[in-house]
Image (cartoon, rainbow, N blue to C red; front, side, top):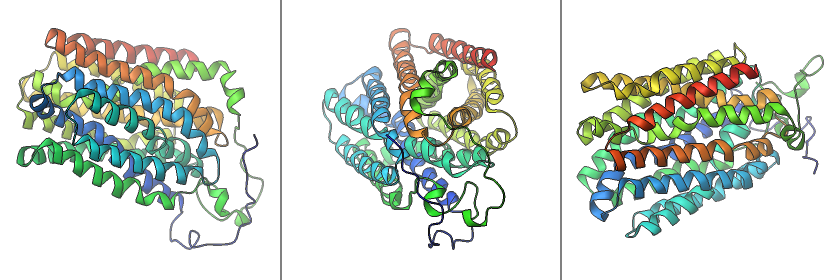
Length: 415
């Protein structure tokens, strides 16, 4: 089916009268949605212990819910991200799925049985998440930029870093002063405010408003438009590079959600108190945030395949380090993971428009996303079961490092 392509001589609207390019409004909306969406994952690491104690569940029971959420998110991405290729598809998808997520978070505060948690937090929340923040930052934000795409994606995805920096300590205080049920209700309200209401500001691409990527009305453009690669989803899946990128990104992302999500429990394994363990997640968020713009700047200067290779090497060297660190020195690990995951998030988001273009980005991401998501969810399950069985994370951290190294090797040979 042909994707609609509106004429670029549309009349000036309030979007053009802003003192800055409207694409940065899309970036700001993406920032808030990434804060709320990823804040759920970071908060779960803090809420998991009081939930486990109050309900008599195991750590694997709780993080199985996160695993289900991520897997369901892959199915949701397959169903929903294609809507980002249509004029009003992103706005409607984000608004509807965001409302579903907010309601499911509120209902999670009432769960008593583990199957209820898996259904609400895992299945319902997960399916809806596939049409929400990931759709916006991966399939909409890159459409608005060409020269500054790296910095734009980095800024939008900073929301997850700020969430890791702010929410763990805040949720830990809330749980300590109230209870875990209240924490889920607060997260529901936060999600509705930051992720549902701003959906009205979303526009698919600059051409829909008579603009061009990076700014300036299209009628002011002089000379021929820049040549961009444009590949259909059907053609992409028949190309060798598509499957090599899936392998690279899948290997790399085993750690991008699992290690940060279990950061607090890992530090409790290192005999940190829950409050000091929550500080590790805050340090992770601080360094993920502070390095994000640097990665975005580098992405605008060097080919993305080189960046993805370098990130893989960095993560291969740093991910297993917690095995050998103890005491306050272990906080260095949280900082290094923050830097490495930050680079990975930027690189893996940029690699798809770099190779396949903007036109069918939603459909292409929808086809590619299930593979790395399955790997990420399996990694979370591996880490939680590793601890339940052995009382440590040594084996799973070693596996994370090996996979990161393999991802760098595949990307290097691809380039």
